[in-house]
Length: 329
Image (tube, rainbow, N blue to C red; front, side):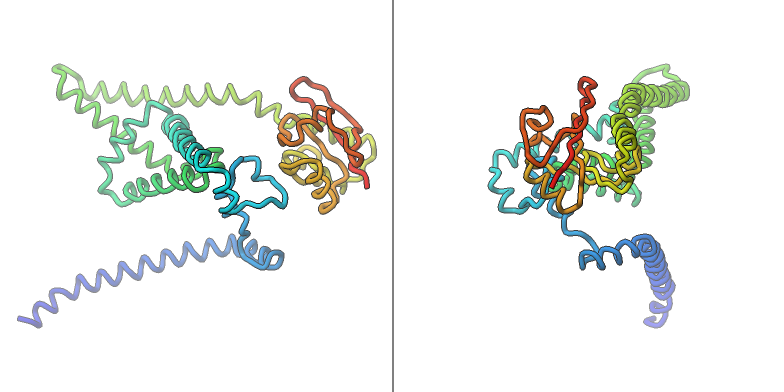
């Protein structure tokens, strides 16, 4: 009898072992693919910084202002964060919780889909993929609200939630189906098939119309973003400024895109910080536009003077005003 019981259990044990090895094999392939892509960057970081990943990322835990993401040689630590005060800390967390919820409502669920998505996620919770998606949603919502607060509500949560869209939309359709069937059971003479067709088609149409509406409102801003950089680049070429000259600007990647000239970001600090960054990275010009750091507002408006910063060109275009300073020794 004992031998028979042993023989009866062996197939299950064999299947469990097979599944375990299959999972290990798949995770090994995922890890290998990740290292093939990221390995060169890790090696580069090791040669430059001595570590595979920069420690600067964790310092965003202690931001008290999003602009300090671009501060230079500032102290971002638990001590400075606590010095900010518990009132400010609590307010920032509550604000992030509310803002990220609005992002989930409007950007991920297009407003109307959220209640159906919640119903669908509840109905589909027994499926592993949807269970994991619910856990993932909870983790990124809390992490981008309570931990990485300022980067979270400024876009971190939105981008991280992109992986959830397939699950949210499937759950939304499942929730819509459940809601339609629930109403049909309570309304006599309702044509369930017809109602399902109308509601599904309406959901797709509303999603398309909302997307078009938002895109049309944003297209002008996208089209005109950093247009002044082209004018600055043309002026620099007219002045025969060498192509390797480094410019300090608010959006270095955008400046490179429009001018093909190297650039470093304007620090969130005063003129002293600007000059220290210029000396360290060899920046010969400083460009301030409407997105300048708050501590440089007086310099941008022309109300502050600095012996090492000389205005060489101004582009007056209303709220798109830009001022170019030459950095002298």
